[in-house]
Amino acid sequence: GENVEQHPSTLSVQEGDSAVIKCTYSDSASNYFPWYKQELGKRPQLIIDIRSNVGEKKDQRIAVTLNKTAKHFSLHITETQPEDSAVYFCAAANQAGTALIFGKGTTLSVSS
Amino acid sequence: EPEVTQTPSHQVTQMGQEVILRCVPISNHLYFYWYRQILGQKVEFLVSFYNNEISEKSEIFDDQFSVERPDGSNFTLKIRSTKLEDSAMYFCASSLTQGASSTFFGQGTRLTVV
Image 1 (cartoon, rainbow over the protein chains, first blue to last red):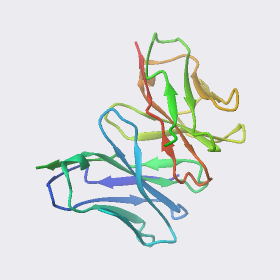
Image 2: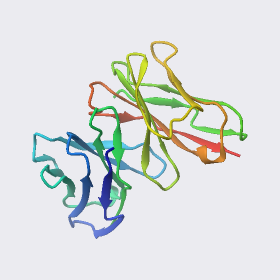
Image 3: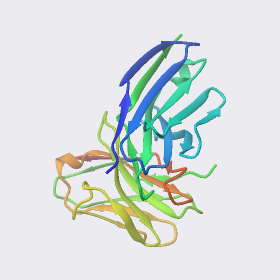
Image 4: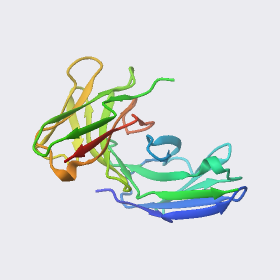
């Protein structure tokens, strides 16, 4: 089955810097890759996603890139702000599209 | 904005007891899921449900777990005989289209088994 690896586990940046979180997946049949932001004690919130027919997608300060050949995808946050501090999870849909398989999460800390 | 809602927000139960966690998915969504998150760990898939039947289940979803859509709005997860290791945050989620795309999560039920 699908396996998702995520790095780094923690990331500390200064306000205004960029942050990059990387994930790899194992199942080449996966075709949907969302990113979720989870603040302490709250629900995972979908912040951006990408399908396998697209290499890059951007939404304001957030972008996601996908390399299907290498089976990895990355989240890029530019001009980070303290309110970006949270745990970020990448995920990949399984081959049947019936489940999301999550990475272990990255705790992003943005200091002002 | 429509949301997935879950009740209760926190449930404490004795080991061996049955619990039912309740969810109201987003009204026009057709695909329903349960995930769990042990404190400090990643979100783990339990089960997906479509057209009144289970589409997929993980190894975690053994015979002590069951799901039901008893009416047109509710979606429930039952744990028949709780164990200490069932303590976790349980998230219900739903999506409109297949492929797990645009899956939205509820706020979670924290289950504590004592």
